[in-house]
Length: 421
Image (cartoon, rainbow, N blue to C red):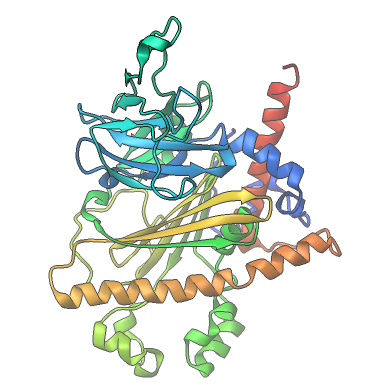
């Protein structure tokens, strides 16, 4: 897809005339036929993040991932040579799911020397080769070299594992990510090994939840109960404006200023925050992570709050100025349901106080995330009524406009490409 130029500072939507300023339709969030097109045009063609290398700490480590939107399950493993590979989670004998525990639709992980099918005990090594067939002599002209596990395109950037289900990806992973994302190279992802993970099944289209985190216009209103009434009222009246937005190809960025919680008036903080010296923005004691990569804090805010990088189609990396980051994944399961996953990453705590500070930050984040999610099912049902079919977006909601524009562009490109097939 085409890349947009980096805009000058100031009003944002005007710098991207391709997006327009007219009211938008949310038909792409309520139409089952559009969802089916998204599955083919996007989730079977784009690079998708499925995890990090820390999930594969040793040779033989593996995990499975259910990618409903692509209609498949995959195995991601570290081979005996140390390489990371991905395969379709399908036995070549009768099509049984190869790796699963008690519940075949649930994801699993572990360590093994080989993968053995529960049905007829066919075995495959970590490089996907078929190594054993029960009663092999009863098969006709069996060439085990032809019946290894089907590979999935797999590549790694900065420890993030991506897969692509296309027969042949249209771009390499680096080309797909583009300069806005690759300028994050050098961030100390490998030092962020203290993890907190949340997962939820949401009865709303995947893009609606992405939209909830692509603007901060809502923050003073939706999150008002997190602050004293007088402050919340003043904040709602004043509003909030992020200092920087950027679009690069299919990906998006919003960057915000921040606050130094410990410098706020006492009545603005909760007692538990003073006790734990932590809160929404993370532990107050910022770790020394060395020089940050050039892609962070493009507006040079001081204090800097966060940068939210929205990687198309369904992956978000959100960096906090206090020295930690989190990720979001939005995995579609139907036109009006999806699985939401969030993982918070901190440096390993050195003291009990640091551990408690991380846990409070994780719990506080969860509360804010629940507030953002609380509107979604109501939004979905209202949209499905089709009582209103056009909706207004303000300048701050440019990233929302871009996500839906990009989704349509990928579908259009897919339909043109396959029109003669």
